Length: 241
Ligand code: GLP
Image (cartoon, rainbow, N blue to C red; front, side, top):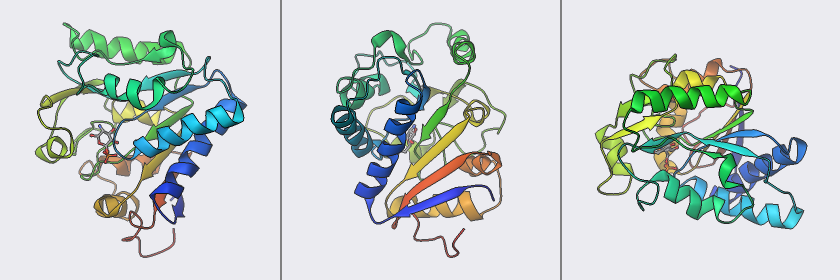
């Protein structure tokens, strides 16, 4: 087991620690390539990042960001889109430059080309230095639902009922997502999970069988991964790992 696990008192502390890692990484490498997620877990994290950026006077102007996923068919201005969500929760609050923000276009006519172009774009900049991830209650990462191949690349996927339930009402049933294989290529990965609803997925990811049934279990093969949990999310881990 190479996964390093940090368990913190509560959601706030987990958000703070994740934000610190983010800001410190930018400080060390101002032109860092980041992979970013959406999701409720990251609302306090992005809030904290914006706060820290101001406090420490660190510029994100040279940072490039690649978001993990986007709903299929949604325009970036659509309030249900992840692009809209990222603008609201992070990009509008920090000094990232528009030209350095990369997103899958959910409305692309040729979605297969959109996905392979995204892979090419990531490669062109030398790959992702630091990938942040949330965790789905069913163990998904990005929108890689159970059954996804560990070698999968950026592609269109069908969302499961449990994922649709966890997202806002009325979202499309399909999405574009980086693949598990794409995620595993990142040089470093930070997965943050908080709350009781994630405890089972965390247990399966850390202690269960490495299997396509739990997409996040693929991360155990990664050489440089840190799991940041609050006590609730870690509550089903019996042994100290
Ligand atoms: C969403 C996103 C994932 C996110 C996960 C957890 O569906 N596609 O990238 O990490 O589910 O979201 P939350 O933090 O809201 O529980």
